[in-house]
Image 1: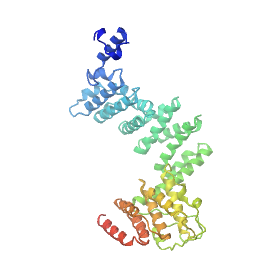
Image 2: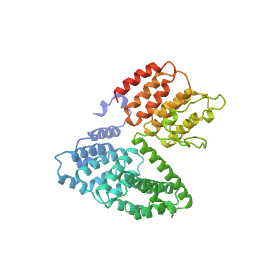
Image 3: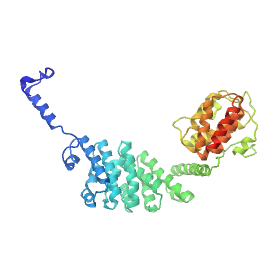
Length: 416
């Protein structure tokens, strides 16, 4: 472009500025042009990201030879330490393909780089991919966990230390404890839990004990004696919750409806309400005793843990069974239970279905048929069939829906 041929919009630019713009434009190349090795080291993160994706395809190709993998044996470790999170995520994809093809070629320092550069990343996708690779690395390389523990003992900043502890929890959760030297693990984690000046590190360290309890159960108790008294008490409470959750989860997996615990000493079932016990009860309403503040469902929120939701629903079942309740806001209770029936957690959905059936035995009024369709829709999960039947039996007792429900239920049974 000649100086006198400048577009009207850039008439105020100097000759030097125009020449700089033209050079910059000429320097712009497509992301896929040039040698792959040059693009892998390019200063633009977009070019590097595209190159990492191409490298992943190259590793995954059936015709890729072991010699190609050896060529990138050390380079892949440098790639996953990329400073840009998007490019780093693509580099991890390439590493996954490399690891699938040549896990035996992985260098010992890979685990440390994954934890310190990727698990500690603020980008969730990078964290998830890195943890998945570390879990597979721990299976393939017996020294990987040992290296992680050694690095955790070395002085680190808070962010890196938390990443190492999070990695240990993930490995235990995914691979169990057979590949881990428990004495070294507990000694290392105990040091972080008792001597660290950072509260996050101390709290995260206790998560390792909770993961170990899922495998050791009561055998875990002697290992917490060297912790601080407050930490011991906290873990004992968490262990009790884990034991209860494990028991209920086992019942659900076997198709048995979990029972609700009651504090009432006068209950003939001593506070335990199975479906059969509820079916044999008659619920009569009292106009003076049910208030919004007393309704346990009012405390349920979206961000609650599944076990907390389940416990609140169980309290509502007990609340209805005391024959001293009145529905001040039945529609609100149904709305909460409806959301819980949709919950992905089987224990929450199972308990909500029982609570809905219990509520319908205590009140007599018509409800929208969309609710019926929701309940019937849970027939697809065989673990919920018994609870769905109980809920539908309660709904059928309401006038105006019995005939329609019989038809819907008959159709549902044919598709089980």
